[in-house]
Image (cartoon, rainbow, N blue to C red; front, side, top):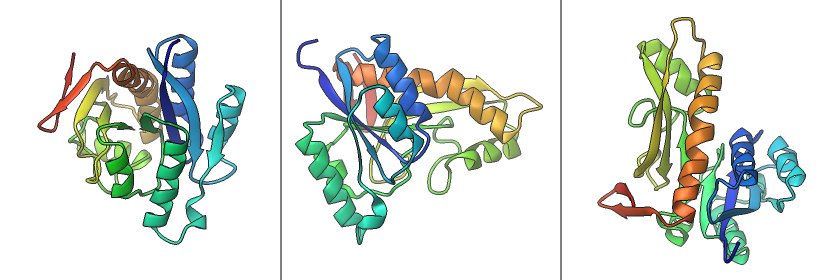
Length: 210
């Protein structure tokens, strides 16, 4: 592959979405993209083992070692730039970052959210809380959204969405797993491919796929 687009995946936990990206890469489904760096916000998370098994360079930039968000964000940007990263993917990255990161990578930071934005999103909606809220509301479909990350939580331009059936006997845990399997693990690698192959244009807070 000539001049691959270097991708960094930022993680805070088990790394299931990271694994979906690694698997897609092994199948040749990331287009010109290549995961060249994994950054964890705390040591000892299983995502680091996933990176090691795949032969991907990984490092820990621990939030607890920095006095404030500005210092932490500066350290992130320094590592991303040093590694010549072109696309950043947040895959279960639960640490707050500031405008230094957004300014360094405008329209180049992706996140996957386990609901159909603008439903069940924004501050406080993460993990099982999203699925608990969906079930409480009695929705018939939920799903996942890949969006561009902006300073406002879950409000950036939508890249891809995929709907998933909600079943009458669902629990937050069963719905979470089905959305991961049927939506998140499919549309996140596809969005990364579209960006890596330069198929995406952002205009007026909307994404257009060429």
